Length: 79
Image (cartoon, rainbow, N blue to C red; front, side, top):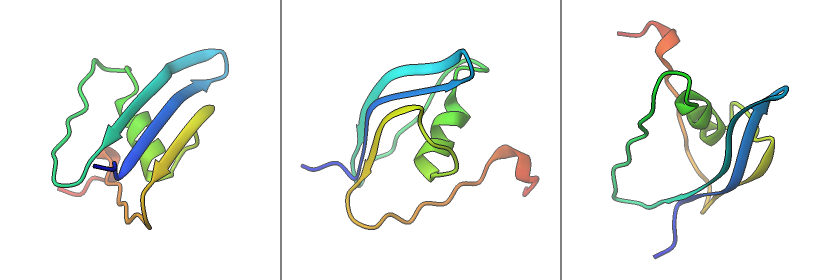
């Protein structure tokens, strides 16, 4: 089965501070995924990369087809 989204060797850093390196994973249709980590571990940064709101320092984000992605972050104050 082909993945709907592939992250290949993603690295994101801000200046000299790396957020994550060599991140690779695949996401498939009809599945649920959870991103877990401590505060400051890069969860929001990863979601922003997937949504196209930020660009990786290196690596590729590949979508199959024409993706429709929405991002609703915690700072929008929509409750």
